[in-house]
Length: 454
Image (tube, rainbow, N blue to C red; front, side):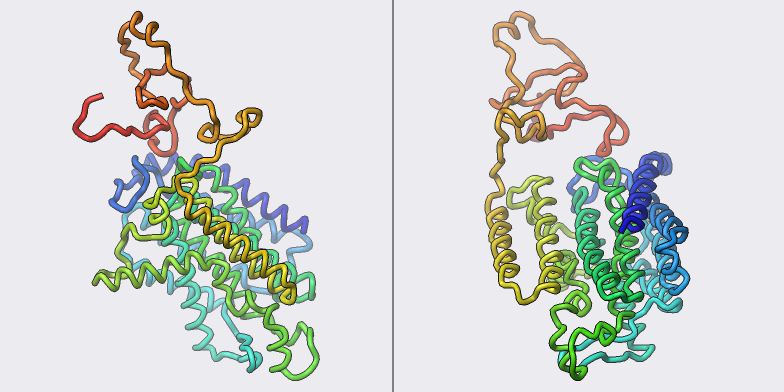
């Protein structure tokens, strides 16, 4: 476990440290597209964050190759090299798309080629456990088609959900954490070497997401772009393929009897193997709904719109941060609930806990305008929006005596709707941030109607 944690920390550190220079590079090269109709940010923001994430992936693999306990993964399996080859190809396609906006069909072809490259190097599904049947061996063509389909679906699911600051990176990190716990249990609990590559892939994936998240949380200083979303989607798919296609269920020897009886009895243990996409159920659901919605309207399935799940959360009144946290909650509930059920399927308390947490999630969805307030003693430890105290109004007499003053600084709105000029360094005035990338702006949106004068 220490080697995995070291690999995770190195990956996160490299990704975090490189994201700042990559942001400056994106601004210098003009990788700041104009705001589109479906976007929720207000000002152009640099992309190309996937560059830092790719080098974090390379650093994680390099460190793992030099660790004594993880070096066997590279000696006994070609899967890490297959992952790196496919990741490099999909990363190049993503970088070109972030800069030049290439066609969606070209990206789809590139995703299929990247999956094919991994298949050629051995990262493919060899067999699948089927309940009531047993382990079914696949032909080379069947394994190739199933692997390519899984890679393409996962990549596009992650790409589609990348619509809010920190959403895609956080949801993939949650899914990777759940998958890491499961693959680690298979690897060290049952001593199956075939689960070691997936354990390493998920640890590196968590490091990539954790290193990028501080720069991508609202308000985002940089976006990962397609170079990042397609990359982390491919790594997550590679981990699922590695476990599903390489771990032979008969090697576990959990139950006596024939293959069919063992498969049926061991079904809860193999839920994440049989249904690896359940750990990203929210992105997959968003992908399916988007395809159905656009096809029903006579549009292309790749046509962008504002009908994604995170857009709907914003429309019903949730704030940006609350919408992201709600998506985090449901992703964690599904991912960790499946893993917990696979470990103790006979425990009723797991089912009851999942039901209770689902009820909590539904309540959160029905209270979009509820803003919790921290007690007075805890105000120093929470963000300003959760504090009871607001910017205090200046006495009217003092304002009238001093007269209007042209400060040149943005204005902030107090609780009664009046605007008061603030000086530099006061609350609400910041320097260059990720949403602007070119100059200062207020953290409070301008609520004045169009056509009015302030």
